[in-house]
Length: 313
Image 1 (tube, rainbow, N blue to C red):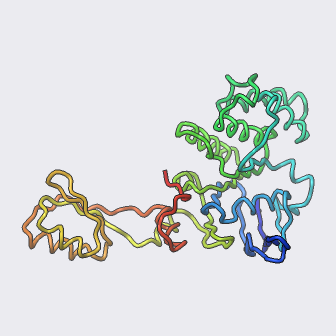
Image 2 (image 1 turned 120 degrees about the vertical axis):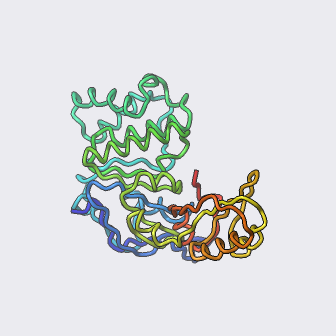
Image 3 (image 1 turned 135 degrees about the vertical axis):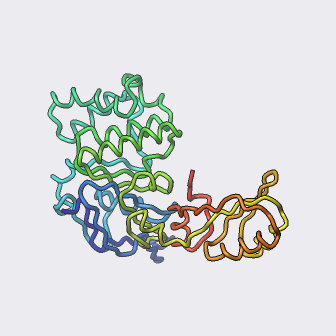
């Protein structure tokens, strides 16, 4: 049974002074996320990722379409107790401590008081916030607030966890810890659906991904299958610079380090590059296939060069 079924969801806004101009934030699409999956929802800023998640959580209303969560209608109040949600920019009461915040959200989720008392320190330890358990949130950094936000999303042990940009504001160590948390949720049989524009995180974590741009779903699939669609490239390394102009004429990107030249070029041009190196009587060092990344597929699918908002760090 799919944990999430999106059935033609669409969202339009009326904008402008007289609200007569219609803006399409999300075009109708179909999407199913299976139970136990880590599913990445990818796209540049403004693609419609947050709009989709808000629709699923009932925070905004669709122009058309519907959805099912954990096999039930998305508007069913009871299903919300089995979902954990982290918004992109969470706002918490500044004067609560981390422990008080989790107790508050545990009560909102209908947790048993005894189970809640045991669960709060366990979740704080899980997100690396034990030392800050009694600290008021107003003293937290952005990264610390992000961690406590993840803690409130999983405090009630939900079956489905929806995270909007969970890596936002985290340093490299914090991102690694969040990735470990997401993997552990999968190991527990939970479904994780998260949006991101940090493609390396999606490539590391996800069973499948969907690519969204300008409110339109562009692709769905396993990361390895999607990247296999990108034209292959090879790196050729040789000693000497006589063949460099001829190899560059084939469309290769060449870099010289000491006496070695490294060229990355389409696989179809490999034979011509090797012929140029032989004719120049220079020594071939290596030929290495270059694995396509999710970034390559993403940019090819969007038909654009890298944008500042598409992070690949």
